[in-house]
Every structure is written in C-alpha cells, then in structure tokens.
Length: 305
Ligand code: NAI
Image 1 (spheres, rainbow, N blue to C red):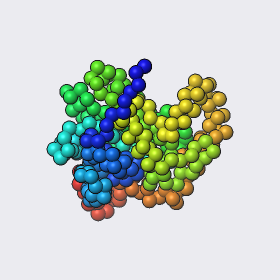
Image 2: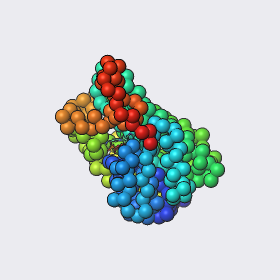
Image 3: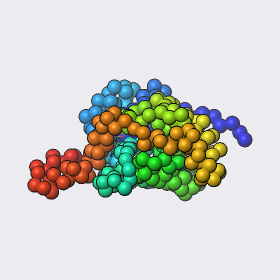
Image 4: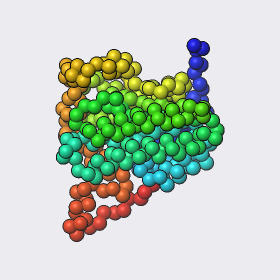
C-alpha cells in the first residue's frame, strides 16, 4: 500500500466545540502553534472570547450551545464568515455526571443525551451538509474509551459515547463516495475538570489533555477512523473484544478497570458536577425546577447562545 503523506495543518480552518477548557482548549493551542486557523465555541461567551485571545494566532471565540440547533448553525456561519469554510469540525463538547443509573434524575439523563448525543448529531449533520458539495472535510467526534466498553457508574454517559461511536461509523459508511474523513477519538481518563476525582487504577492510567490534543492533530495530518488515546488501549481492546463476556469481566476485575467510574472522590468532583448540571441553558437542574414549582423566584433566563 502506498505510504500516505501527512496533510498540512497550516492554514486549515478548524472549529472546536467545547473549546474553552480541557481537551478542546489543548487541541486549539496545538493547532494554533501549527498555523491552523482555529475557532472555538463554548457556552460561556465571555470565557470563550478570553480563551481565544489567550490562544493568539487569530483564533476566534464564538458563543455556542450545542443543544440548540440555531446556535450551532450560527456558530458555523460565524466561523465561515471570519475564517472561511470549515475544513475540520471537532465535536468535543460533552459532560459526564456520574452515579447509579436507577437513582439518576431524569433531567440529568436528558442533559447528557442532549449534549453528548444530540449535540454531536447536529454538529455532524451541519458539517456534512456543508462539506459534501466541496467534497472535502473532516469530522472528528470525541467519544471515549467507554464508547467501546461499559463500566458501571455512569450508564447514561457510557450510552452516549456508544452512540457517538455508532453514529460516526454509520455516517462514514454513508459518505464513502464524498471524499470526507471521519474520526472517533477514544481517550481513557483525561486530567481535566471533567475527569476530576477519578482515580487511576492498575488498568487505567490517566493521560493529560495535551496527549489527546496531539492525537487529534495527528489524525488531521493522517486521517484515520479510530483514534485511541493512548494508542495501546486500542491494541488491548482489539485483543480482549473477541473473548467471552466472563473472561472480559475477569480481566476488568484484575485490572480494576471495572471500578474506574465507581471509586471516585465526590468532594473533588463537586465543583465539576455543579458546572455540568448547568451545561444546557433552558434545562435547569431538577432542584431549581422544584424550587420554581414551589413558588420560588424564577431563575434568571440563561441566554441560549
Ligand atoms: P471539560 O469539562 O474540561 O471541557 C468541556 C467543555 O465543553 C467545557 O468548556 C464546557 O463548557 C463545554 N460544554 C459543555 N456543554 C456545552 C454545550 N451545551 N455547548 C457548548 N459547549 C459545552 O471536559 P473535557 O475533559 O475536556 O472533555 C471533552 C470531551 O472529551 C467530552 O466529550 C468528554 O466526554 C470527552 N472525554 C473526556 C475524558 C476525561 O476523562 N476528561 C475521557 C474521555 C472522553
């Protein structure tokens, strides 16, 4: 097979959702360093603009709520107006509230699906519609290693990431003749606010956001579908996947990877869980809804960006 030559990143227009923090921000930083024209979209308009300024290199920060279709379309329009047609969309925005599924309140379940699944569906659809006529473009969807395996302790999150994997594979298969590229990014635990309070286990070492960013930048240069971070977890997954379920469970127990979403430090996660609960303007946490129903002051409406 002919050796693929790396594509230049310099000058590419890359739009990143959830780009104000964590993996999204680290990816934006690396891309700016390599001369890409980067736009980040995130919920908090002021923070997004501030981070874009810190990134330098002409990076643009625009408000974005991925759960709101109009907001997502306006984000695309804004990026195209400021930087030109989007070459790469990184659907990175996501939340990870953890807990026992049977006890999870319905608003939390809905919020996870709205952001992690509907947000990625909307972004992928809008991107493909704009990229197909140009017969060029790359959609990079940030899933997780739990898009392939199913540890206990975050069932809705796990379901949302399986959905991102299936969506990306199916849409790639629908677009084989359109010259587009699709990638699924599947990191283990990453040391960001979203990953706070999650402990390393024998089987699950964490990585830094810059490592995931590096893998995303590499996938832009040499497009490939499955991007495991670190790369070795992909080899381990492929080796253990064909085993009977009982053997897989035994391996997970031996590596303690079955405990990764269970043995968490709730104190360390509290600030993150609170932020995640406010990640969908218009869908208030149930405690706030209950206060309103009981005659409390209605909360300030949050601008849908
Ligand atoms: P983070 O919490 O540090 O950053 C996520 C960003 O998404 C935040 O800036 C947040 O404001 C933004 N966001 C949330 N809801 C949004 C919405 N409705 N519209 C627009 N932006 C929104 O999280 P992190 O760790 O950087 O995660 C990024 C992605 O990586 C997520 O999809 C996550 O599920 C995935 N991931 C993270 C891992 C980890 O351990 N940190 C492991 C595997 C995957």
